[in-house]
Length: 268
Figure 1 (cartoon, rainbow, N blue to C red):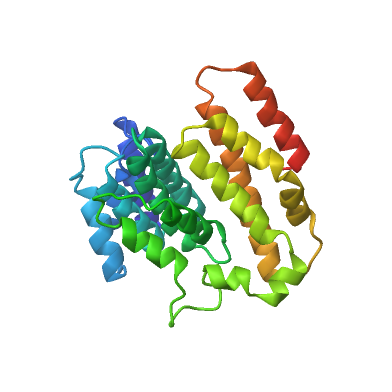
Figure 2 (figure 1 turned 90 degrees about the horizontal axis):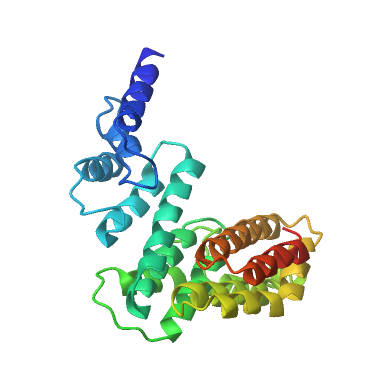
């Protein structure tokens, strides 16, 4: 118990000196695990200590995000909290990109990150959408992340997200016939917002596909995979609507109302 309290106090010390989750590199969780005397997985120790060393210019450094994605996979800390921190950083990178190339780098990391989650179709379909744009970039992991997200691995477990599992799975197609259309609409909306910087088009894509999205979210099934997929899609639709609201920099009241109406129409 004293060890746990000690680690908690060590973690909170970072906040006491002004370091915050999501606004700064993730020193609190990383240093907590790096400096713990508990026996941790070798990969956990290595990546947590690398992040703790702070060898990054800022939290939007692509290398930092690559390391944080790896850390989120092996960390013993709260899965949801740590994953929300990583997601926030990835979306900030995608938004801050001054060009389609730099924004696409951020979205390649998002695709890879979401592809780690069981039964999440967003990652594979987002990666496929980015691949179709044939964007050239010098980012070291860009192609690797896109390939990983869209290719089925021979040693993957049954819950591995990949394109074929959604296009060819008869049980999924029967229980959730609009799954692929709804997911494609969501990924098209994401690309329109971040790569094309077109908030109106991003909203319209969701509006034009609201029936397929709503049908998916309202589907009544006891198929475990479909239940999980629905939860993942719903969670990210809420994130996308929140991001649309954040990107409405001019505070256009018509845009704000469109987003609110869309949220109500989708029932999320």
